[in-house]
Every structure is written in structure tokens, then in C-alpha cells.
Image 1 (cartoon, chains in turn yellow, purple):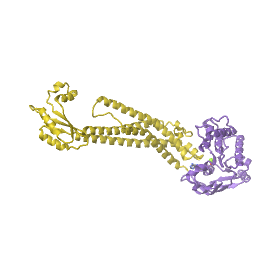
Image 2: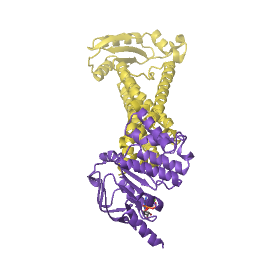
Image 3: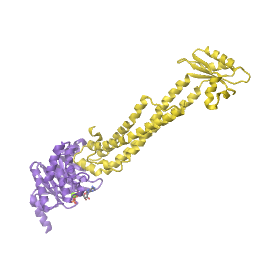
Image 4: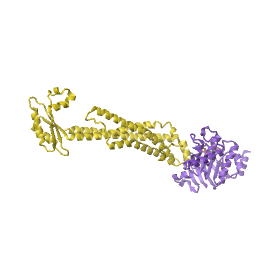
Length: 295
Length: 232
Ligand SMILES: Nc1ncnc2c1ncn2[C@@H]1O[C@H](COP(=O)(O)OP(=O)(O)OP(=O)(O)O)[C@@H](O)[C@H]1O
Ligand SMILES: [Mg+2]
């Protein structure tokens, strides 16, 4: 381990022009893997926050009807809902409140109030209780004609499915990046072996152990990878922060900024370490394999 | 020390370049190996240097049958053998000093020790001035001396030299032959492949004569007599 970053004294691999491109390739690979990982983890937390936000909240919509006292209908529906077990809070929105909600989209509140708007009741279900939403919805619409219970559930299911597919894609990208990295390293190590064949033979014949030779290759390639992996990782994190900033500006409830839980950060920090380890193991495997072919 | 019993050797699927080699070298002996070009001298030395395996027969080195050795054991055997390659095989990007230090570094010797031993030996072979020169900037004879220094730095038990004095003037050649003799007196078994009749005449050591892949043994006198006859 002392010689982990040590030079390769005999092979002088440092002078190879052919493997200098390697850090750039590794940086790109680590960047992609890190982004995929960030995607994986932030979708995970997004799904969780959607679920908790959505599952506790229902909206009852009372359709606009000309010449009907909507306030009365609202009160009736609210009263009806309050009787249900498991329902924690019923909050009928006044026409002013509804108008304020729409103001950012439609403009002046005083004009919005003139529009034939449906009226809304926010319903919060108490945590841990199971309300039969379908039954509640049915009863409600018979009791108060024109009242519709929106459960958000089908919408959430679709979003979760989408999120899961994207997560699957991210995992596939990471796997692909890993495979491509191994292939690149195999090529680079093979090229190095061929270029230094004469020196390797001499070292071998004067009694160098396979490990002595393999170590020089391992250290060299591990160092190249580290040189590439760290910037790749840093750029990925900066990209994430930039996206967070942009998403934060949007202030859209749905597109939350990519936030990482602790596990996410740990996994992200593991990416360069894993790439360096993967490289070391691959290089060792290649070099030891071809040394075995010599007497 | 070294024993060949009906040893044959071929390169890949090619024809046998060595056939039915039988020989026994006693510890501390000094031998010349000669024969026309292409006779297989370098090939025989490759067997001795543990760089190739015999394709048949038994080769015993340091009391161990080579084909029975584990791969892990070979490095420690090779460290007991010093080899001067016909084509030197120096590492071009390393200085003369580092080239000679290589066997010591590989066996994990102490850096200070390495430095003293290597500089002393390089001075002795007349390369005190070229210690930090890289092989491509050295003359043929100078490269050859670096190669010899690298072969003997570890005080090998077996020294193999392929045409070790071919690229230098007779005086320097003699000096190096005396180095080999000194080592031989200290117990090193020496095998030197050469075309140089003068050398064989002067050192009157046993001669192994390779012709068409088979080995003939004789004393120096006998060989020289035969050589004269064939010339006349
Ligand atoms: N690496 C190789 N692959 C295939 N054939 C080889 C190889 N090296 C040598 N030979 C063949 O083996 C035979 C013996 O070659 P070798 O080099 O041992 O001869 P030599 O006695 O050392 O000759 P010289 O005096 O010219 O050095 C030759 O016919 C040569 O063509
Ligand atoms: Mg030869």
C-alpha cells in the first residue's frame, strides 16, 4: 500500500502516450455513473414525498351549478364528511381562498370570483387509518349531488410507475458504465503489456515475481483512474447542485430539487473508490493472466 | 549442479533445435560452449536460464528437476542464475546504474547497499564515467559491460554468458574473463558461449561443442587440435 501512488520504476509506464487518455474516459464514466446514482436516489426520495403528500390528502369538488346555493351544498358535504371515521380534518375553501389559489394562473382574484368555478373542500385523512375511499366517494355523491371525491391515487400510481422505470434505467446505465469501464481497462492493460513485453521478459528472467510486475501496472492504472474519477465525481455533484438550484427556482411542487439522503451521499462517494478498485482488480487479472503464459 | 539427460528442445511446433543433450556440470566448474552459428548455443543457454522448457528429457538445476518445479519457485531459482544475453537486453530508459541495480532491487535489497555495490562494480568494469548514461548512448562494448555487471551483481551460483566479449577489444575482453574467473574461484559455475578460439586457447577450460543440435564434450587441447585439423 505504501507504493500505491509510487511510480513504476522499471516499466516507466508513466511515459506511455497510449494510456494518457484514460483519465478522461474514466472521468466521463464516473460522471455518468454518479448522475445515474443521483437520479436513482432522488427519485426514491421524490416518490416517498409524493406518496406521503398525496395519500393523506383528498379533495372534494362540488361542480358549479347555476342558481344553486353552493355554500349550502358545501356545508352539507362538509358535515357529511366529518361524520366519517378516520377523517381528521375537513376544510371547505371559501370562494376567496379558491380565487387566491388560481390567481397565479388566471390573474386578478376579483374577476376570478365571477367565473363559474367549482368549489373545493380539502380533506385530511388521519395517519394510519384506512378509509374506504371508494365507498366514501359513492355515498358522498348520492348524499350531495355534484360532489366528487378526488383521491389522487391513480395519478400517484402512474407517477410511481414512471419513477420506477426511470430508476430501472438508471441502474441499467450504471451497469453498462461498469461493463464499458472494465472493457476499456482490459484494452489499456493489454496494450501496456504488449508495449512493454521486452522489459517484462527481462524482469521475469532476472527473477522478478509476477506480483512485482503486476503491482507496477496496478498502481499505474489505479492512479490514472483516480485522476479521472475525482473530477468526474465532483462535476456530477456540481451538476446536481445546479439542477437543484434551477428546480428550486421553478417552485413547482412536483419537480422537487434532487435531494440526497445520507445513503445517497455515501453511494456517491463510493463510485470513485469502486472504479479504482474495479480497475486494480481488472489490471491484476489481465497482467497475472498473461504472465502465467511465460515459463 | 546442472544435469541434462536426453534433453530435446523446439520452438513452438518447429523442428528440434537441440537433440539428445547429455551433460553434467559440477559445482564450481568453468565451461565454454562453442559451435557454428545457428547450432543452438543460445537455445541451450535459454534452457539453463529457465526461460524455456525442454520439450523432452530431464533438466536438473541445483538438484531439482525443472519440470517438477512450481511456478512460484522459479523466481528464486532465477535469482541464483546470472545471465548475459547475446543481445544484452538492457532497459533503455534506465541509467547504467539502475540497470545493474535491477536484480538487487527485485530481491528487495537495501538502497544504500545497492548504491555502494553497483558503483563499485561499474567502476571496476571501467564504466565509472558512464554510470548515469542510458544504454542507447553507450557503445556496444559498454553496453555489454553493463549487461555483464547486471549478471554478476547478485553473486550468482550459475553464470551464463552468451558471447560476452564479442563487442569489445581483446584487452577489455580479457579483463572481463578474469572477472568470470574470480567469480568461478568463489564457487560460481560458469558457462560461456563463444566463437572466440583465442579465448578457448587462453583459458584451457573444458569445451562443449554443439553441432547440428547435438553436444560433444572435449578438453580445450583436444578441441583446439580438432579445430586446427578441420581448418587445414
Ligand atoms: N525464438 C525462436 N523461434 C524459432 N526458432 C528459433 C528461435 N531462436 C532460435 N531459433 C532457431 O534455433 C536454431 C538455433 O539458434 P540459436 O540462436 O540457439 O543458435 P546459436 O548457436 O546461438 O547461433 P549464434 O552463434 O549465431 O548465436 C536456429 O536454427 C534458429 O533459427
Ligand atoms: Mg546465439
